Length: 208
Image (cartoon, rainbow, N blue to C red; front, side, top):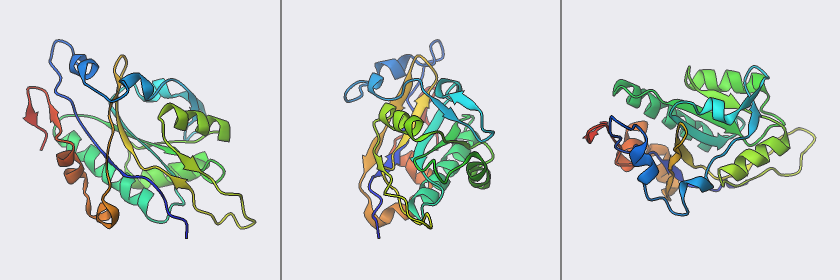
């Protein structure tokens, strides 16, 4: 059985002053610099329309790369992110969960719509051509590998399992961290993810 590689994405929310909502984000120290993550590229949404990622990320977003046929890790991580979105919403912070497939051959717009609607009403599913998915993964500096196709399309996709917190321009990428949790990853809830990221907003009050 193929092993899906990667690590748990940890969500971080920077403290942001009222006069400039993204000032601290621009000053945050990020290894390699924030410009190495993200960028503008085109994918296909759940309606089959071509969309710019810049349009999708016009508000704070949690971005995750996975695939709907994943037997365990992707559903757990996506559900955890959906829970984190609801916890942030309860604290007055609207964040959009975004799911980008690494398996465009099977994850059609219709398949993605059914899957994301089940997980969270605001979750956005994105697919595209193999070249478009490669460009998206390269922009986020994440890895995946689709094996050779079989007749019955029964295969697993190796991929990293980061969650990215993205804010609107000019900041874009805010934080991505990893913790190698092994079997314990399934026990992590959205609340624990936020606590692991030491999330803070506004005047420094903790979100949770």
